[in-house]
Amino acid sequence: MFTAIKNNRHLLAVIVAFLLFVVIVGVKGNFPTNDDWYFVRQVKAFDLGIFKLHAKVLPIFIVQGFLGLLWGTLFGIGFDSLRILTLLVTLFSGIILYRTILLVTPQKRLAGLGMFIYLFNPIVLSSAFTFMTENYYLLFMVCSVYFAVKFFNLNRTKEFYLALLFMLLTSLVRQTGLFLFLAFFAAASWKNVKNISWRKTLFFFFSLTVTILLIVFWPRYQTSVIDKSINLSSGYNVILERLSVYLLAIPMLVFWISPLFIIKKPSVGRLFDVSVLTWLFSYIVFRVDIFPLGSVFYFESLHIKSGFRHSLSIFDNVPAKIVMSVYLGLLISVSAIYVFNKIKKIHINNRVTVFLWLCVVGVLTPILLTPTVYDRYFTPLIVFTVLLLIPEIKSQSKIFTLGILIFAFISVVNVYEFIIVKSLKHKLYESLLADSTVNVTERDIYIDDTYSKYLYAEEQEDYAGRGQNLPVGLVHKCFIQQYTIDGPFTLFIKNLEDKVEKRIKNPSVYGSTPPIRNIRISKHLNELNRNEMYFSPLYSIIGKTAFVGSWCDK
Image 1 (spheres, rainbow, N blue to C red):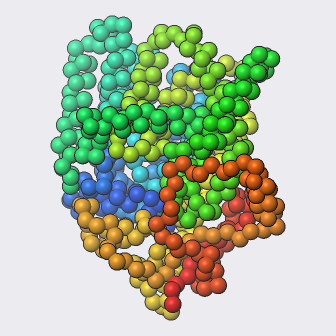
Image 2: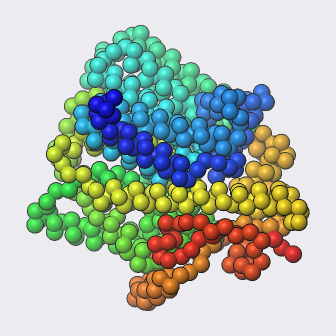
Image 3: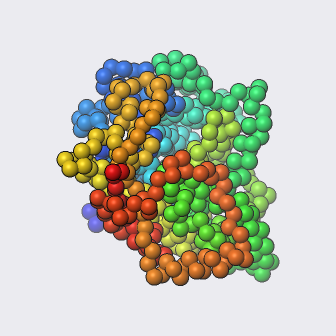
C-alpha cells in the first residue's frame, strides 16, 4: 500500500489539494452561480419529459443534460446536487489528463504538475462550482484525447472506437467538439491514408454523421443552432476584429501555463533580450489592460466589469497593474523566445503531435464565428498545450516554483472569494425570507440579476426561454451586497496609489461599462438588518475587512 502511495504521490497530492479547497469553500446552497440556471432548468425540463432545448441554451447540451437527469434522479435536481456532480466530473477529468500526460512522458512529477495546472486554472476551478458546460465538455474531450493518443501509440482497434465514442459525447455537450473528429482522422491517416482500414473509416463517418444529425435536428425553442453565429458573407469585419482577440488572449494564456516555465541560467545576450522584450510587453499589457477579454483575472461575476465590483477591485490601480504587467511581460517574453527557437527546430514526426496541433487549430477557429467571445472558450487549450510542452521538459529541469505559487494564489483566492460571497448572499437571502418581521417574498429581495431571472423563470414555469428575462417595472424591497471597510494599512496603500497615479495615468478598464443599477450598500450601512463578516485573503492583503450585508427600503 505504501509503495502504491509513493508511486502515485504526485497524483494523490493534487487530488488532496483539490478536495481540500472544495471542503474549505463548501458546496451547500441551492442557488445559481451564473448562467448555469439555464442548464439546471433544462435538466428539470428533461425530468418533465420536455426535451426541446431552452432558447438560451446555445450549446447542444444533450449528454450533460441526461447525465444531470440521471444524477438528479438519484440525488435530486438542484443547484447544490448538480454542483457536486460537476466537482466530481472536474476531478475525474483531471485524473484522466494525468493518465494522458503519462502517455507522452514517463515523468510523474510533470504529469502531476499538468494536472495541477488544469484543475487549478481559474476558469476550470470556478466552473467546477457551477453547472455550466465547460467542465463536462472538458471531461469528454480529455477522454477522447486519452484514447486517441493511446491509439496512436499502440495502434489498437479498441482505442480507435473508444476515441470516436468520446468525441461523439464531447460534441453532444458542445457542438464545437466536432473539431476532434477532423483532427483525429487527419492525424490517423497522416502520411498514409491506408493507415485506417475501411471498417474504421466507415465507423468514423458513421459517428460523425450521427453527431451532426443530432446537433442539427435536436428540437429547440429557436430556429437553428447557428442562429447567433456570424454570417460569413456579412461578418468579414467582425472576423477581422476577432483575430485581434487572439492577441488580447496572450497574457491570459501564458499565465495559465506559467507553472510549466523552467528555470535556466541565461547567457548575457539572452538576459538582454529578455529584459528588452519584458519592458516592451509590460508596457503593452499595461496600456491595453491586464487580461482584456475579461479584466484583471477573469471569472464569471468576479471580474471588475461586473457592476459595483468595479469600484471594489483592488487591482484597478496603477501599482497593482504595474506589478502584474511586469510579471506578464516577463512570461510573454520568455514564451516568445521559446517559440522563436522552437520554430527553427520544429519537427512534426509522429501522429500524436499532428493530432495535438490540429486540436489547437480546432479550438481557435470557432472563436472567429461565435457571436460573443468569453475567456472560457480558450480553456481546452490548457489540455493540448500541456501535452505539447511537457514532453519538451527535461527530467533534470528545475520546476518554476515561484510561478506555481503565483498561479495557485491568484486562482485560489479569487475563486474562494467568488464562491464564499455567493454562499453568504444566499444565506442572508434565506434569513430574510424566514424573518416574519421583514415580510418579503422571493421576488422582493435583490441579490443579482442572475438570481432574479432564475426566480422569474421558475414563477412563470418557463422552459422555452423566449419570454422576458425580467418582468417590466420590477421593484425590489431588500438588497444584499458585499462591501469592505478600510483598515490602517489600507490608508497607506491608497496614499501610495494616489502618489503613483499623479505621475502615471491609470488606464481605463478595457471594455468596461457603467453599472446598470446605481445601488450601493455603502450608502446604507446604518440601515443594515443583517451583516456577515468573512475572511477574505484577497482584501486582507491590503488591510480591508470584508462583509456581506443586507438592508431593506422603508
